[in-house]
Length: 167
Image 1 (cartoon, helix red, strand yellow):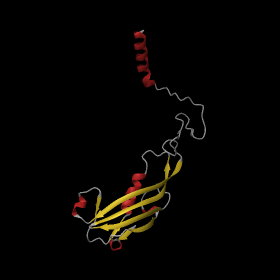
Image 2 (tube, helix red, strand yellow):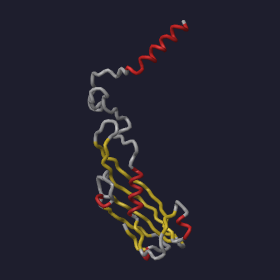
Image 3 (spheres, rainbow, N blue to C red):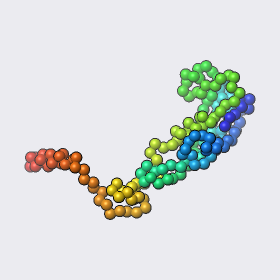
Protein backbone atom coordinates (compact mmCIF):
# COMPACT_ATOMS: atom_id res chain seq x y z
CA UNK A 1 0.00 0.00 0.00
CA UNK A 2 2.86 2.30 -0.85
CA UNK A 3 2.59 5.15 -3.32
CA UNK A 4 5.62 6.89 -4.78
CA UNK A 5 5.47 10.63 -4.15
CA UNK A 6 6.59 11.15 -7.75
CA UNK A 7 3.28 9.54 -8.84
CA UNK A 8 1.21 12.09 -6.95
CA UNK A 9 0.58 15.36 -8.79
CA UNK A 10 -1.80 18.28 -8.36
CA UNK A 11 -4.35 16.35 -10.37
CA UNK A 12 -6.30 13.66 -8.58
CA UNK A 13 -5.16 10.10 -9.33
CA UNK A 14 -6.77 6.86 -8.25
CA UNK A 15 -5.08 3.78 -6.81
CA UNK A 16 -6.38 0.34 -5.84
CA UNK A 17 -4.68 -1.98 -3.38
CA UNK A 18 -5.36 -5.39 -1.93
CA UNK A 19 -3.69 -6.08 1.39
CA UNK A 20 -3.34 -9.64 2.56
CA UNK A 21 -5.14 -10.24 5.83
CA UNK A 22 -2.13 -11.97 7.40
CA UNK A 23 0.14 -8.94 6.82
CA UNK A 24 -1.90 -6.39 8.79
CA UNK A 25 -1.67 -8.03 12.20
CA UNK A 26 -5.41 -7.96 12.92
CA UNK A 27 -6.56 -11.45 13.97
CA UNK A 28 -10.25 -10.61 13.38
CA UNK A 29 -9.74 -10.15 9.62
CA UNK A 30 -11.67 -12.78 7.68
CA UNK A 31 -10.78 -11.55 4.20
CA UNK A 32 -8.13 -9.53 2.40
CA UNK A 33 -8.42 -5.75 2.63
CA UNK A 34 -9.43 -3.85 -0.50
CA UNK A 35 -8.52 -0.17 -0.64
CA UNK A 36 -9.62 2.33 -3.27
CA UNK A 37 -7.92 5.70 -2.79
CA UNK A 38 -7.62 9.01 -4.59
CA UNK A 39 -4.49 11.12 -4.07
CA UNK A 40 -3.27 14.56 -5.02
CA UNK A 41 -0.63 17.04 -3.90
CA UNK A 42 -1.37 20.55 -2.68
CA UNK A 43 1.78 22.49 -1.76
CA UNK A 44 3.57 20.51 0.96
CA UNK A 45 0.57 18.25 1.57
CA UNK A 46 -0.37 14.89 0.07
CA UNK A 47 -4.11 14.35 0.43
CA UNK A 48 -5.73 10.91 0.34
CA UNK A 49 -9.42 9.97 0.38
CA UNK A 50 -10.69 6.48 -0.01
CA UNK A 51 -12.60 3.44 1.08
CA UNK A 52 -11.49 0.32 2.95
CA UNK A 53 -13.53 -2.84 2.42
CA UNK A 54 -13.13 -6.20 4.14
CA UNK A 55 -14.88 -8.64 6.47
CA UNK A 56 -14.22 -9.30 10.14
CA UNK A 57 -14.83 -12.61 11.91
CA UNK A 58 -16.08 -11.86 15.41
CA UNK A 59 -17.67 -13.64 18.36
CA UNK A 60 -20.97 -12.32 19.72
CA UNK A 61 -20.69 -10.98 23.27
CA UNK A 62 -24.20 -12.20 24.16
CA UNK A 63 -24.55 -15.66 22.59
CA UNK A 64 -20.86 -16.45 21.87
CA UNK A 65 -21.66 -17.47 18.26
CA UNK A 66 -19.18 -16.57 15.52
CA UNK A 67 -20.42 -14.09 12.91
CA UNK A 68 -19.07 -12.06 10.01
CA UNK A 69 -19.21 -8.26 9.93
CA UNK A 70 -18.71 -6.42 6.65
CA UNK A 71 -16.56 -3.29 6.77
CA UNK A 72 -16.95 -0.47 4.25
CA UNK A 73 -15.19 2.48 5.85
CA UNK A 74 -14.34 5.84 4.27
CA UNK A 75 -11.16 7.66 5.26
CA UNK A 76 -9.35 10.94 4.68
CA UNK A 77 -5.74 11.55 5.61
CA UNK A 78 -3.18 14.23 4.86
CA UNK A 79 0.57 13.61 4.93
CA UNK A 80 2.57 16.82 5.15
CA UNK A 81 6.20 17.84 4.76
CA UNK A 82 5.40 21.02 6.68
CA UNK A 83 7.15 21.27 10.07
CA UNK A 84 3.85 22.14 11.76
CA UNK A 85 2.47 18.71 10.83
CA UNK A 86 4.00 17.23 13.97
CA UNK A 87 1.81 19.50 16.13
CA UNK A 88 -1.44 19.06 14.17
CA UNK A 89 -3.33 15.86 15.01
CA UNK A 90 -5.08 15.89 11.60
CA UNK A 91 -1.81 15.79 9.67
CA UNK A 92 0.67 12.95 9.42
CA UNK A 93 4.29 14.11 9.29
CA UNK A 94 6.36 13.18 6.27
CA UNK A 95 10.08 13.71 5.79
CA UNK A 96 11.03 15.74 2.70
CA UNK A 97 13.43 12.90 1.88
CA UNK A 98 10.69 10.24 1.74
CA UNK A 99 10.11 9.09 -1.81
CA UNK A 100 7.03 7.01 -0.97
CA UNK A 101 4.08 7.10 1.36
CA UNK A 102 3.04 3.88 3.06
CA UNK A 103 -0.70 3.89 3.79
CA UNK A 104 -0.62 0.48 5.52
CA UNK A 105 -0.23 1.83 9.11
CA UNK A 106 -3.10 4.27 8.58
CA UNK A 107 -5.31 1.58 6.99
CA UNK A 108 -4.51 -0.78 9.88
CA UNK A 109 -5.42 1.93 12.40
CA UNK A 110 -8.68 2.62 10.55
CA UNK A 111 -9.60 -1.07 10.64
CA UNK A 112 -8.77 -1.47 14.33
CA UNK A 113 -11.00 1.51 15.13
CA UNK A 114 -13.92 -0.04 13.21
CA UNK A 115 -13.96 -3.17 15.39
CA UNK A 116 -17.02 -2.65 17.61
CA UNK A 117 -16.53 -2.54 21.37
CA UNK A 118 -19.78 -4.46 21.88
CA UNK A 119 -19.75 -7.25 19.31
CA UNK A 120 -23.28 -8.44 18.58
CA UNK A 121 -24.38 -10.89 15.89
CA UNK A 122 -27.68 -8.97 15.78
CA UNK A 123 -29.14 -6.03 17.72
CA UNK A 124 -31.95 -8.43 18.73
CA UNK A 125 -29.62 -11.15 20.04
CA UNK A 126 -31.18 -12.76 23.13
CA UNK A 127 -27.93 -14.22 24.43
CA UNK A 128 -27.55 -17.25 26.69
CA UNK A 129 -29.74 -18.36 29.56
CA UNK A 130 -27.84 -17.45 32.75
CA UNK A 131 -29.02 -20.65 34.44
CA UNK A 132 -28.61 -23.46 31.87
CA UNK A 133 -26.58 -21.75 29.12
CA UNK A 134 -29.06 -22.42 26.29
CA UNK A 135 -28.69 -20.13 23.27
CA UNK A 136 -32.00 -18.25 23.47
CA UNK A 137 -31.82 -17.30 19.79
CA UNK A 138 -32.28 -20.96 18.80
CA UNK A 139 -34.52 -22.39 21.51
CA UNK A 140 -36.30 -21.53 24.72
CA UNK A 141 -35.67 -23.10 28.06
CA UNK A 142 -37.86 -23.69 31.10
CA UNK A 143 -35.54 -21.99 33.57
CA UNK A 144 -36.87 -19.30 35.85
CA UNK A 145 -35.50 -15.87 35.03
CA UNK A 146 -35.45 -15.02 38.69
CA UNK A 147 -32.21 -15.89 40.47
CA UNK A 148 -32.21 -15.59 44.23
CA UNK A 149 -29.29 -13.66 45.64
CA UNK A 150 -29.15 -13.99 49.44
CA UNK A 151 -27.10 -10.81 49.77
CA UNK A 152 -30.29 -8.76 49.18
CA UNK A 153 -32.37 -10.53 51.87
CA UNK A 154 -31.53 -8.02 54.59
CA UNK A 155 -32.58 -5.09 52.41
CA UNK A 156 -35.83 -6.84 51.46
CA UNK A 157 -36.68 -7.32 55.11
CA UNK A 158 -35.86 -3.68 55.86
CA UNK A 159 -38.16 -2.61 53.02
CA UNK A 160 -40.99 -4.76 54.43
CA UNK A 161 -40.42 -3.29 57.90
CA UNK A 162 -40.60 0.27 56.52
CA UNK A 163 -43.74 -0.50 54.50
CA UNK A 164 -45.43 -2.02 57.55
CA UNK A 165 -44.44 0.98 59.68
CA UNK A 166 -46.12 3.36 57.22
CA UNK A 167 -49.45 1.49 57.49
